[in-house]
Length: 237
Image 1 (spheres, rainbow, N blue to C red):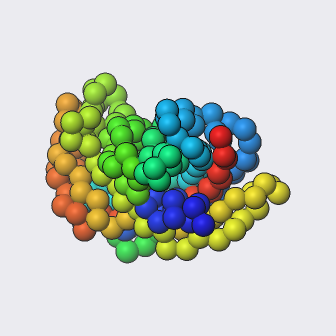
Image 2: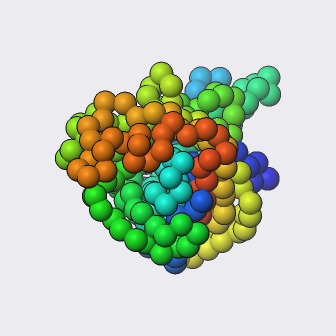
Image 3: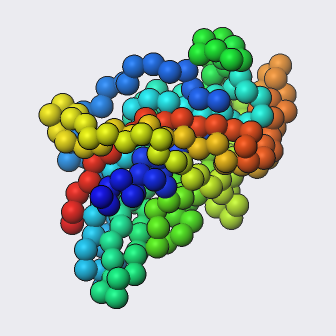
């Protein structure tokens, strides 16, 4: 099934972002609708079939460095949109539509538990899409994370356009699902192999110092973990 093949790479994680897991909890509100496909990429010339996949994160989170107690919560809808099809000669072709959603909270938890210890200082994260790593496949996505806080400055980020974060979420379980009577797939995904570079263009946080020391950056592959629950829909164009 093409949709399940799609999920193998994306976790839909784990963009994903992906990304030890965020405190678990009930799925937050997700109401499927036409807006799920608002960012579908245009069909490339010469493509004989084209399908848009909309992955909406409904639960989960990811660690943000080697400091295991600092996590990003996927507590709001975050939608990843991609397109995939075939050329007349059978070659696969894929495009990234975009990543849209609200800013996500950075929290501190008690290590080894799901208990939130603090949400201070108030730092939020915006996931910014860069590209598909391989234009013939949607198994890995490159992103950068923009950190938002008045002390950090307007351009504080982890990852850049030239050197983005590469997410390769793996789907652990994928099941047919009804979202308010709308058919789709619910997928539980994870990524334990993403690396994070040092932050760039960032100020310092009061009492906590620089972003790199606060989060434990750079962070090699294997130090971070993302766990994401996706609501996945597809639409043939």
